Image 1 (cartoon, helix red, strand yellow):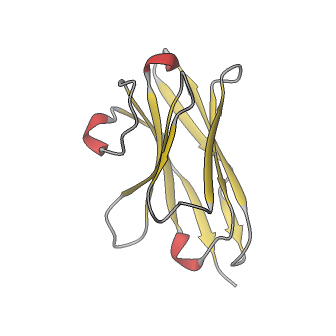
Image 2 (cartoon, one colour):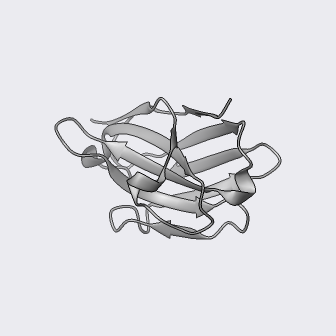
Length: 124
């Protein structure tokens, strides 16, 4: 069964850091791109970062550049999102998703497996 399970969300003060994890199972990850997306209350879901699992190529949305880092551990079938310098507007539910393509993309229609999400709240 194809499954993605996120963890690592929580509450943090502005300027703080969090590391999200996404553990994948039932997927041949070398053929996948894995993306992190987020949805804030009242807003559309947006793509944050993507990694091609085979060669660890990465791409970032403008909102994540310089603050967020996506990475993967092949042995653990895990994808990480390290988030630094967090701001209140980073508050959202964060999802990881898998696209059966070997290219970097944040086009949501290409992602066919989604995790359940993990809440990130940035507040003083």
